[in-house]
Image 1 (spheres, helix red, strand yellow):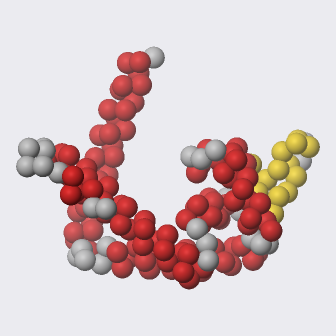
Image 2 (cartoon, rainbow, N blue to C red):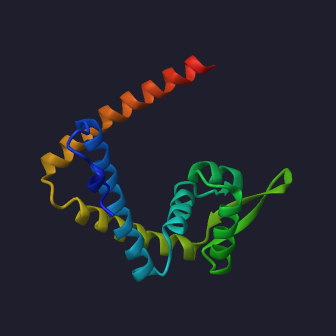
Length: 162
């Protein structure tokens, strides 16, 4: 559903903008999810987990993966179990800590992820293709400004509650 359909004439411009950004994000995400499923028989959470591992070739502990993905350890364990069964990731013991394991991409996983990541980039470029390069740059700059403001306001409110 298009979230902007919820708007009324008396809603402010800020709310209109927020719902437009959220709608665009959801439409693009739906497209990416669908294409990952159709072309690679995978899911966005699996793609995201592999993306985190691709950035850290030596591997990550489960708790670090959970933190980066902002999901529970149980979610990460389930996805890791599936990817391990498919030969995409491996669990490697951590020297000096018999209980800890690093999760890392296998060569098969790196190859599969590289192909998915390339297609992901193509899909995002297609989704944003209705904007000129200058419009993309302007939107990127404006969203960066918004991001800094929101982070500053959030940090101020955290400081007040402490």
